[in-house]
Amino acid sequence: MDDKVIITCALTGGMTVPAQSAAIPITVDQIVEEGVRAARAGAAVLHIHVREEATGRPVADVELFERVLTGLKERTDAVLQPTTGGGRGMTIEQRGAIVPRFRPEMATLNAGSFNFGLFPIAQRELDLQPWEIEYLEGTRDYIFKNTFADVAYLSKLMAAAGTQPEIEIYDVGHLFNLRQLLKDGIVSPPFNLQFVLGVLGANMFEPDQLIHLLRTAERLFGTSNFTWSAAGVGYPGQFQVAALSLTLGGNIRVGLEDNLRHRRDAMAKANSDLVDKAVHLAALFDRTPASPEEARSYLRLKGSIDTDF
Image (cartoon, rainbow, N blue to C red):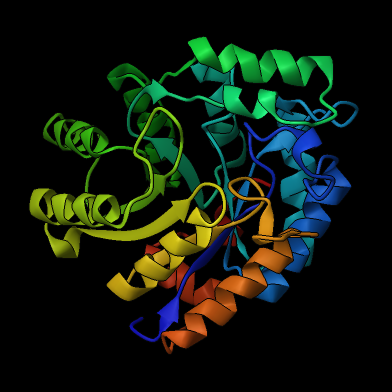
């Protein structure tokens, strides 16, 4: 895989509000179309949230997930990675319901709790709906809850479903949480780690921070016991993180969930704009996008045939 890179595209997100950009897909049809275009552009993995179609509010509606997952599976061979992170106000049971219902190849697993601050967005000159203002301002007092009990609960669901967790690491303490979960027999290597940098309340993006996360993971688990990817939140962080990840030999995540700009002076018009830029960036490092099948092999996934959608 030295000459390949797995590109994940996070299509819509559970925290981003629609007023930030008209490009954010809201309806099932929009999310499916965005996923198909992102896969054609070079994304091997599609990271999936769903939204209430009338308002754009993030939800954990299993029926909406079914429509999105089924629609994408009919039109692309990309790895479909639904979230168990969800959004503000969702219970752990709601967040985890997609795992036993759909038995996906891969799903996200957050490794620890942290403050998740989006309230500065509410101060921008945006045409925000009342629910968006409340949602954003409410994050002043919001803890994204992922206790040891929560992680154990989701891990057991994934083990029973044959679903490979993509373990999201927002801060270095989450790696030490993972080590304890390993000691307790709740998780087992090899791990797929996704380092996420740039969320207010967790680890912000500085080159030293990503390197520290990577070296800590290597020290705790050994270089042969995990694969990794990195995601930067916001612009230019998304592509700064991607460039450093490529330099260090990792995989990358882009998409409208995390960043809305294609360039400093231009908003992205679609997720595929961000995937296109990631593909061009990877080429500067002599790396080409991995196919979905190559990603499945590298990430040790069971294959799309063994899912319930």
